[in-house]
Image 1 (tube, rainbow over the protein chains, first blue to last red):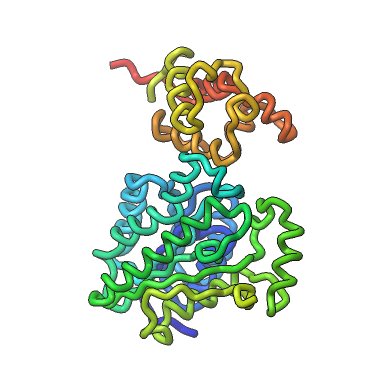
Image 2 (cartoon, each protein chain N blue to C red):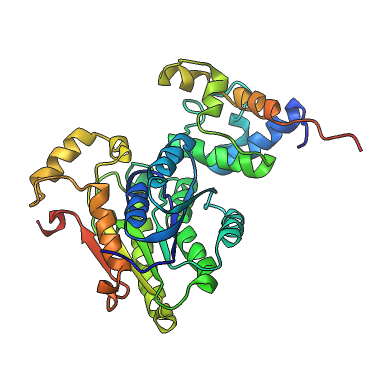
Length: 250
Length: 101
């Protein structure tokens, strides 16, 4: 799949795991400039930069804590100093506390909800004046937004918020020629999977229920994102595409 | 960047911990262990870090606070030695004197 030329993409959480895979996919599929926001782990950000610099793409690292609207403002000062338009906005940034919802403390709720969901909305609002007709927005969600996953109490509601937000935005922005969608990921092999309590047992259980008989990879999610931002998905608005190897069917 | 004395930093840290962990201010003492005495979890530490960055106006790099506590420590040792006092010391070390006017 080759995207049109002169495309600019902004990705939050774009230097590790799924975000890195998406950034690499964009670089391999004709995006000319990628601005990758990240919060922490400079070493991983440099690794991503080195990988993407192998392609003919201008890659800009943008460290900012998008928990805070004022830091999002600063992020967009950097964005506007590098481009006058954004064609693609991908929201991958997420924080989690692996515990039951009944035990989530107010500060943990605020932290996860604001980084996972509120920051998406505020970034979109900042992107809109820079987005020409034909632009596309994709949020990365997860199955916990639609189904109960044990110890996923902090993340699940934030992903549900994200999936509802993309529906409203899709309807509101359709007239401007901007499409908004989401990709809901099943269990994906990333570093964060190791933080899940009893992750070995979890992987075993998920594999038993997954018709595809494997865990997802960051590239699986990146491919779904590539589809949603391409012209092949021109008539898809406000949808959450589940990429889970069929886990949610069983 | 402002230079603060122990009491000023402790007062600000006390406020941050109260807001983040919702613990009674009387429980927050210089020697209080942030994990075992005040009930913090790893996500709370991130929250406290962000609040410190906002309030004191500097960025904390990955693992910087842990490195300040000691090198090659186990998780249990870090949790034991990570006190309100160690956080106060860390912040003082990061705050530099304002230039004289």
